[in-house]
Length: 148
Image (cartoon, rainbow, N blue to C red; front, side, top):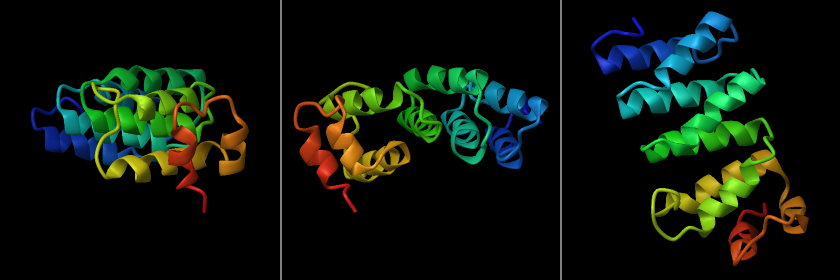
């Protein structure tokens, strides 16, 4: 079913495998993370990054590859999945995206604050963030709004 011509069916495959840690299931999800359909890639990246608890270099590499996807939701899901695994590059990438004002890396619109706060809280507390070397050009004020 993962090669079915209908993207809705391929998306359903990712939903069916969302919490799997079986190697064949992970391989299928990673295959679907390279699907030509934006929504299939998005759901597959969400399945691996957020719904699956498996953490390994293989999983992290698959998520890192999605950081350059053409679809913003896929990039967001990949970054969120890496943050969930406390990947060392995640916070640097998040701050870099928050400081970007245009281009594919910029996080735009009203979801910017909500998404950044959610990802940041997966990584560290607000106090830890303020003490880190990652707070750049105005990001401290931005992240300050995330303080519960």
